[in-house]
Length: 310
Image: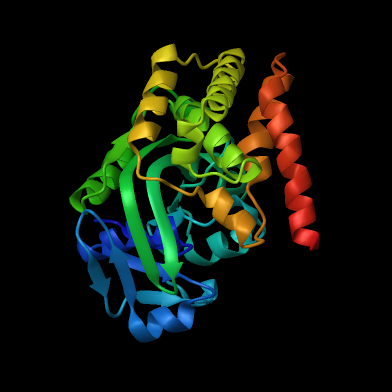
């Protein structure tokens, strides 16, 4: 088993890191706002996989105090990446890998600038999970991770180190699936993330409300089609069946307030550039103007700026 640093002990990092620690892996958590609570009371996870409590997790509020690890898992929001360089230099040595589990497109670039692209992997989490209190994670549904190598030199292959990481996660009860093409994984996740994160803020609606309203559902589908066209222009073709599956899965999902919606309501910065700006610019550079995505992107820029100023 490898050793892990979980950078961000929120809805994602708290769940996956907690499961890894529960399974016997060496796991060190970086926490900020609830560091004192976790050190005093531990980490609690409520999950369909089974509720559990880690009474004495290895938790830190200063990355300089953390040991070097085999894998640093970036589990915080992309809006926190300004401090990524400092943290990775603290917990990584030359052999360490960085696994970026963030939403968006080409968000591995920040980690690659520090660790080198050959040391970076990226993954998308198909997960409904919320942090509902200090050191308290509520996992609602799903949980699969699809991940791959970031370096273009590995495209089309599954590396031995991916299999080793997947084995640790799977032993912990996490559905961790190696993928040959990280870019395809990212675009396929955007087919869901763009409409349901963005519309949840603009329409002030959860997934069930969006799917049950004919106009909102049609708008979500139009955004999905736009993302698929952008993806194709950038070299990744996504079949229509993927859209249909995402719509069906969202209909079956428990009513879910997206992470972007929760950030907006809490007046925290939203991941607008990572989820909307990056793929829109990539498509534009490849010759396709994703107008549905652009409209939502610019609305969210406005809302984010005004939300932060008030």
